[in-house]
Image (tube, rainbow, N blue to C red; front, side, top):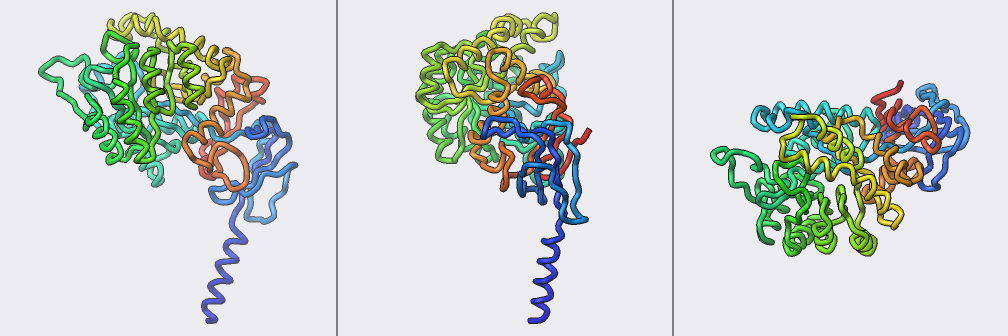
Length: 425
């Protein structure tokens, strides 16, 4: 009994003397109240926010320490709903699939993840790779690699010859005949099999390519590529496994099928009509615009040899239109989430999306809400996206007040994820 009392006393002593971190924040973005607070203190215990109080609160123990962010603006860790950590577009991208082994991809992916974290994105949704993206998620969760919290789709699902068919553009004697295991389906039965395979492989979310795409080695970048029945089979099966479905889509018909079929997000949405916007509002489907990627492919299409010739006209046509579509969708009242398609452009530049959204008419504070609390709700994670007691200590800081200078979001100077500081300039 005496030993038990001594042990209990020692345990209580350890808890009472546990080190807390005090962030003295000159400004703090309250995404729930949609306002900027001044002279605030965020107290962190281990990996959780203990309290957020007005004024610069002093530590209560010698074991505590203070991080001075009095001349910075503090925000929740950012969430990007559309990245591709396994790759970064270059003139050699289409050759890499013949020269890179899985281990080579893994090292590149780890580098891209660390870059993304240091840019202030503490959580991402990875919407397509080989499966290395899922393995990296596990490694980060175990603490053996550094990067953002990852929600992975593993390998995206497409149809034969569609945007996610990995055999596109390969000579016949090298091309396989991919099926549900590789993410290529034809018909509702194979659609269900592909979803279950993704679940077996450890996916958190399902990604489909509802229309043609810009960067696939195929002629059409906007035609519908799934039947409504196939999409319904995917969405119904994903729901059984508690996963939502994201739909890559440029063409309008493919978007409408995806919405009616039950997807939760439309990615890119370039040629979206007002009718489709109305459907998105009606069905509570979120638009992930990826304006930065649109601008990138448009610019790179002007460089001879950067893309295969079959891609150039698609990039020139589709890329410049995304920002205008976003502007119309925002005015119409379409639900909007923040996502960039990083990997189409260099990782770490995800913050450029904020300025592009603002240019198109969305107030700066709303772009920040899209990238924090809105995305957290879409991911069904109530521990991220806001700065308040009981939430995970995912916290970043920038030099200026982004509600007055949105481009400050392109240079994050402080990054904390799960209570650990990864960057402090």
